[in-house]
Amino acid sequence: MSVLVTGGAGYIGSHMVLELLDAGEDVVVLDNLSTGFRWAVPDAAKFVEGNVGDQALVLRLLNENAIDAILHFAGSIVVPDSVVDPLGYYLNNTCNSRTLIACAVEAEIPNFIFSSTAAVYGIPKINPVTEEATLQPISPYGSSKLMTETMLTDTAKAHALRFVALRYFNVAGADPKGRSGQSTPRATHLIKVASETALGSRARLDVYGTDYETPDGTCVRDYIHVSDLVRAHLDALRYLRDGGESIVLNCGYGKGFSVLDVIEAVKRAAHVDFTVNTVARRPGDPPALVAGAGRIREVLGWQPRLDDLDTIVEHALSWEKHLADYRAAS
Picture (tube, rainbow, N blue to C red):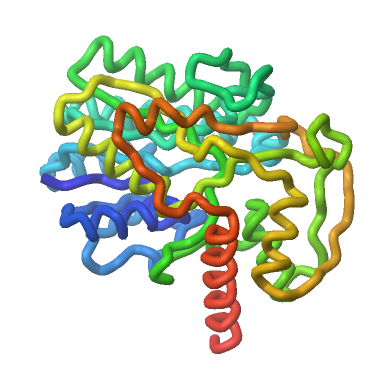
């Protein structure tokens, strides 16, 4: 049997492909390369350029490759952009996911793993936030992902499709072996932006708001290493193949770091100082978002291996140096 990875040429998707190949899985990647990179997909995986909203293409891939599981990473992920372009996010994240789910039902695919987000919680009243918390997204990005969760829940009740939806907290870092990392130009992830600034490819780093009700006034987030995240997906795949029931799980470590904490960690790792400016808050940013992370360990048996901010920063910075060397040589 094979696994279909949508968005497998992107940041998280490419790490997932590596993890699946390392585990001996046959992998098919579908990506339109709007934000991903063809070079990020190893030759051992079958690559198809296309959109998950292309029903005919998706059905052909599912039927021709003996697919038994879909891991769905394709989508738009920048919260402020979703506020500016809500319809674009509902098209790419919700409508295209609906098409993919319909294809899974038609092709009788039994297992579906969905890349969801902690943005479905909006501004939680209590941190760490558990899966039982009220779902009140404050951005079209969060709403678009919640709609897909709802579609999966309803579909699983009506058809022989079981799913795991993993609500990501803040994903960061890079493959410890240096095979992949966050490579998207103009990325907004804090650790990547800080790493770029430390290496001189950005003139400064902007901190969006220092007046939040947090210990140092900046936003607090739960940063999870991308390699731990994709291992959680592999655990989820095994869980579903073993007959596990559909479930939604947080995917984070259960502890938070502020924006200023992260900046100091990057400065320590890079052994440099750099300019930090304070600017206005961005729309759609909750003050704090930390995972209640007990259920995923209990249900999937997931055990993080890289649960350390300095390690996450070290791997991100190493990847950023690799990109800088590559650009200099090009």
